[in-house]
Image 1 (cartoon, rainbow, N blue to C red):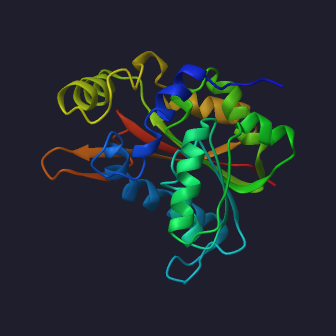
Image 2 (image 1 turned 120 degrees about the vertical axis):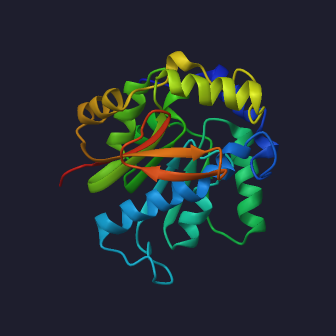
Length: 245
């Protein structure tokens, strides 16, 4: 079994485990981005499975995997929408933080310290796999995406996000976020590991998935908020692919 985890990258985020739910801490950028991420995810799932987001539990009956779940910033909202959620992360410290917070929030979420490859080897299958802000941190993105694809049921979705490898992303995600604003510890990201939309689409296609959407996530330093953009994928972006069935 191929294992795409990168222990050095896992150690980086495990060191921040206690701060996952601090909106003013080292993971502040994720908290700021989270409403936009959730808006994109819920819209894609609702459209694919014919769900009404105005319903009390619109994702009832769906099984969702949040791979690289961290402290559960995406897992918990998916559970609140009615999905059966498995949150998985290779960093045990993150999983412990996620379990404690879910219990405090009264949510039933399965959390496991496990990799995508291990889940695939065990024959797990999900209606939707979420892989947000993780592919740029694994040792082999192509193998990781292949494992994620294996976890998607026929008719299901893989929804992921990462950072584009452009001069804009170097300026924003590294110089801006790590050195100027100090939102993230220096060294959190390696620009050489960023992935272009075409590269990610090719990985998804190679995993037997059909890309159905690409969307930029754009930070506005004037209004100090995030928005979705179908045209601007220069820094952060999300992508959705379907396993035909």
